[in-house]
Image (cartoon, rainbow, N blue to C red; front, side, top):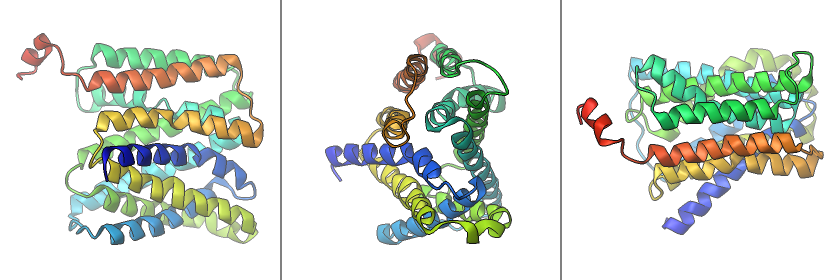
Length: 296
């Protein structure tokens, strides 16, 4: 895979991730728990196929790895369920933009859990994302669907941030595809008791949307992301994935006629700008005075 192919794969992966809310809303007869269960099931199949084609050896899991993967799977299940509830309550645009706040949560949680100093560019990220979220919400009223959807989306972003930090703590030990497959297995097991009673009521067409969600928006997208990182720098990948909300909102606009207001567009643009700016600034070395303070 050369640089151009890897960049194209990243954009395709970002598009698939952006379609998550669209496919979830199209599966109208399925509850969020059924959507998440089905997504995990089809994702496991896709990831297993990718792992077989890649022919890379898997790491033997220790008790510590199993505990971390179990926790990660539970967080992933909560993240997906809350996201699809946000889609049902507030629409694809609000759910996608609310979830896009997760880098701000990550900055705050890293400072608390890992006792890392929050740099000025990271503080700016939190500020810009906060302003963007205020603009995205037409009026803060707990009785309104927009506010309710945004709160569910923020919970989804918080859980995804905790998942990212959990995976960070075990990075380097377990290959990314193996970790994703194991966590999706945990998701499926966790959601099975909640999804089982309603599986028979799901329409065949909705199973198609769920299958596309699991195969393309999870398995294929994750595999493309992992494969492209062998050629593309991580900071470039993070900038490309900043386009995920753009793809999701654009497709929802065309499919569901969810026309975003100018205020929502302004808030979304601010959130995306903050993510892209932060990813670029984080790639730069810290100032000399800060390096000396850190013992560099």
